[in-house]
Every structure is written in C-alpha cells, then in structure tokens.
Image (tube, rainbow, N blue to C red; front, side, top):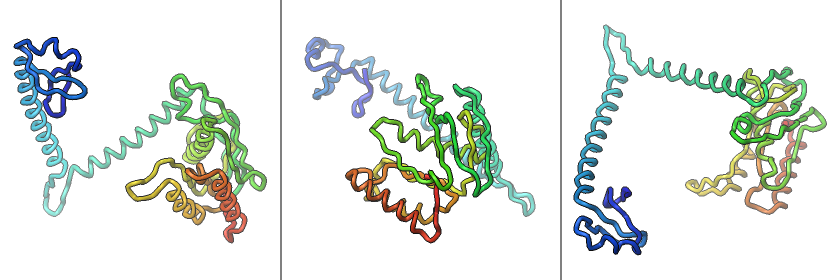
Amino acid sequence: MENHKTYGWCFRLARADAGSIRNQREYKEISTMKNGVFFTTTAMQDLKRDFDKSTRIYNKTQSGLVDEVVTVAYRLFRADTFLASYCLVLEELAAVLADLDVIVSLAYVSVHAPSPYIKPKMHSRGEGNAILKEAQHSCMEMQDDIQFVTNNVSLRRGSSKFWIITGPNMGGKSTYIRQIGVIALMAQVGLLVPFSEAEMTIFDCILTRVGASDPQMKGMSTFIAEMLETPTILKSATSESLVIIYELGRGTSIYDGFGLSQSILSRNQMSSNAWDPFS
C-alpha cells in the first residue's frame, strides 16, 4: 500500500505478480506503470474518501487557528494615546528563550563532554599567543561512536603567524582548522573550552572563507566565490585578526592552489597595513 501522487492511497504489485489478482472481482486495476500495477478496492476507496475529508477538515481548522493566533498577536489595543501589542511581548519572549537555549546547550556540552572543559588563560589584545594542548572539536566529540584524536595548536607572534595546512582526503584538515575558530570564539565569549591547557589572545575579528558549495543560482562557481570573498578578507583583516581560508583554489589544479597561497602570503608581507593574522 502506498500514497500515489496521482491516485492517492492504493495497492501496488510488481508487474510479474499482478496476474494473481487481476481477474478477482474485488480488486480494481487503476493503472500499469514500469514500477508496477496499481489496484484499489471498494473498501480502500471508502477509506480514501474519509481520509481526504478528514485531511481537509484538519487543514482548514489548523489554518483557522494560525490566523487566530496571528490576529491576537498583532491586534492593537488603544488606551487614550497608548498603543500596546502582543508583538513586543512575543519578541521579548523569543529573545529570552534564545538566550536560554544557547546557555543551556553550552552548559550541557560542557558537563557531558568526554573530557572536562577548562578555562583558558586570556591575554590582552595585542599580547600573548594562541597555544592549545590536546584541543578537541566540541561538535565532533559529542557524537556517538567517535574516538576523537586531540590536536595541539601553537600560533606564536613572529614565528608561526601563518600556516599552510596540507594533507590527504579524510586526513582531518577540515576538523583541525575549524576547531581553532570554534575554540577562539568560545574563549572570547567567556565559555569553558575543550582542551587540557591553553592560552589565548584577544582577536578583533574572526574572518573565514570555508565553503564547498557552488552558488549556482547566482551563476558563480566555488572558485569564483572564493576569489570574491578572499579579497574582502584581505582588506578587512588587521594584525589582531584570526583568518581561516579553507581549500584555496578548490576545483583547480594543485599548482593554482600553490599560486593563490603565495599571492596571499605576499599580500601579507607587502601590505601597508601589515596585517598579521593567525591563519
């Protein structure tokens, strides 16, 4: 039994098996297609009519309830020159629930993580390094049947400010660079972070170019989108920014990727603003 987009609820048999009931009076053949032969019965037709009627009544009632809720929410009550609306109340409620959702979710992850989260040592803006020991990705480690391999990160001013990460497919590159951005964000908003020991500096912004989809509706390939977004990052980044650019030259040859990396590195060294991102 299935709900066909044209015939509604009906029975379907393989074409090779349809002959077993084709000559029986209680079964009425509807149509024959490549995926099988469709049948119905008098009882099935009665049930289908009842189902369609109940569905129409349900949808009509549901639409009426939605319209009533919207009407009540936007209805204005006039008291002299004062106008009050339930919209403001609902907007404040939505904001409170959103804050609670974030706080409770972060608290749940911190408590139930395989290894306890700790508080990082935070340096003032323009000072210190970003050093993480046994860092983990918050989303990955919470998944079932995942044995996450911890990673170390050492971004030091003047010696390891610019990283180029290469490796084979499924080697963990994406997880590694994403966890750096996630940990930096979590630390700066005052959350406990998944690592055994760490110190972090204050970033003025986190700029990322991470994406593998083609915005085809806009007529752009992944490479074109990358070429439009990367210059924006280069213009916006400062010496205190965290910059993450993922898979340079995706969809091109490895030599094009090397060339783009070299160009961005040269821009880093030649810029009058001397932007110096941890990247």
